Each structure stands twice: as structure tokens, then as C-alpha cells.
Length: 392
Image 1 (cartoon, rainbow, N blue to C red):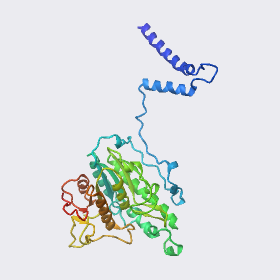
Image 2: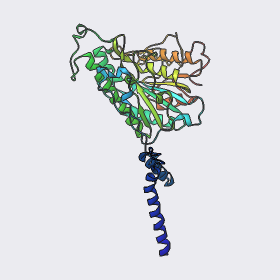
Image 3: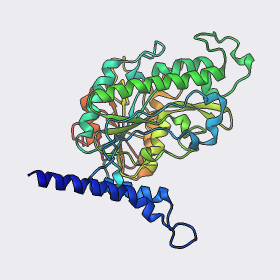
Image 4: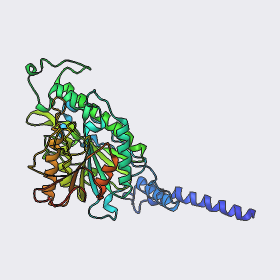
């Protein structure tokens, strides 16, 4: 037994001796010329061989997605957005590239949570945590079916109030046009308001991501001002790779409406409703667009009117009541949502179905996202698509 033990020790010492001497053997010159291989390369070969033989792997390290600040577009050097670059949320598990997954052609849902749904629009930077939590639970149920989701959320009181106060949607204005604006919270100019709103939108996204994590979802976020310039659905800029090809499993990419640099008016507000149009046009496999708002859908009258009725199917050009709180909302309200949804279904030629539902009923969000037959809300169709209904 002792002889066997001594033999094992001799083999180990011999292996160590070979490993330590191998780099120098590889580096012996064949002649008086340069060595055949450098010591560094030789040592690297030895280390890789040893790791492979020992079954050592580094694949168990969680993947963390960080923004490559050295590869940001040129507009990121603008002093207006100097303090807005933030690390993306790290996941607790590595993301799996959908390019290597077997999946059906259509399994992506673009979802928009309205700012008036997830915040209290009457008070600066006030989130509705209970609503966010309920919607996150619904989103987790959707992801468990194998459906991939791109989440866009609105600004609500984290963006609209200060943007309206400083007229950010109108671009850079002369000081004379802002003389009646009260200086508050250390914000005394449009430039300062621009940066502050970006920071506050990041804060809202942090709250949204915290709600997602509570339900086992791994979020990764992309602030629009890091990839977009100009305004409207045809904004300039490339969608980040994970937005163009979202990950599978319990992972969700998020983005939101945001102040961005604009070449014609210095800056403006890029609406989340415009971002969803771009996503539906460029992301492969999108089958549904779901707007979750604070009302049941498109209504015949204002929500508080006793005769208000839900319009189950709406096409571009049909009359309807547009609930738009102009003193607060700077991006168009439900009217813009209906117009952008009509744009999506028209361009998709029936490939994408669009719904506007009440986010206070998370079950309706699930039904709209998964294509179930009990959707309560408004389906937006092309002018020739009236045969479909929101009950299909």
C-alpha cells in the first residue's frame, strides 16, 4: 500500500516537473537564430492544456451586460447627456442568445406600459408600486410560456410634469419664452431640465426592473438617449442588438420614452409609442403589440361619461374620444397610441395584431399577449381588417 502511495506521488512530481520544464523546452532555439516559440505563448499552451485536462471551465460565471462607453455614438459626448450614462442591470444568470435556440417564427410580443398606469401623474416622481408589481407578475406568466417580450414603459410623473414645465418637447427656446417658469429642485434651465428628466426616467426604470426581479425576471435596460437621436418613429440610430433580437427564458429587455438630442431643435422627447413602431418594424418574429393603459381601451366618450362604451375594433380614420391631458402629457395620450398602432398593423399586413387594454386588469394583458379568445379591450386593425374582433 505504501509503495502504491509513493508511486502516485512520484507520478505527480514528474507531471509537475514536465509542466514546469515544458515552456523552456519549447523555447530552445533550433539553431543560433530566434527561438521557435516565445516563453509566454508556450506557458499559455501549457495552462490551457492543464485546464482542459482538469475539466476546469469558466462558463459558470454569470454574464453581466454593461454599456460600452467607449463605443457610444457621437451624440453621447453632448454635455446635455454627460451624466446620464448608467450601467445596465446585471442578470443573475447568463442570457442565452436566441440565435442558437429552436423557436417558432413568431414568438415576440412588444408591450407598452403607460406612464399614467404605473405612476401618479399628478405628483412629481410618484410610482404606483402595486400596479408595477401586478404587471410584473403578469409578464412573468407570459415569459413562462416561451414568449419573448420587449417592454417599453411611459414616463408619467417621472417625465411629463418637468418636461411640460420646461417645454422640452418644443426644443431649445429663448429665455424670454421661459421667464414664467419657476426654478425648483435645482433646475434653472432647459439644459438642466433635460438632464434631470433623463435621470428621473432612469429612476423609474430602476423601479420597474426591481418589480420584474421580484418575480424572477432578469431585466436589461437600454436608455433611448444612448442609441437614438431625432424624434418620431423614424428616429435616427441603430437599435441595440438585444432589442433587435431579445433573449429567451425569464429575461426581458426594457426601454422607455426619453429626452433625446435632436439635430433640428437641439433636443426633444422621443415617445415610447414611437419606439414601439420601430421595434415592430425591425424585430423579427413580432406577433403582437399590447398597450396597457389606465382605461379599458378606445372609448366612445370620456371614461367618466355615463354613456361611455368600449370600441372593440378600431381602424384608422374612425372617430373616437381621445383622452389627452394636455397640461400634463407631452407626447399625445391615447390618440398617439391609436395612430401608432394603426401604423404598425398597416405596415405589417396582418402579421402583427395590436391591442389596447386596461392594465389594472393584468389578466387582460396576459390574454392580449398570448392570443387568447377572451381579450377585453380594443383591437386596432387596418382599414380593410374589420372582420377581426377583440374577442378572437
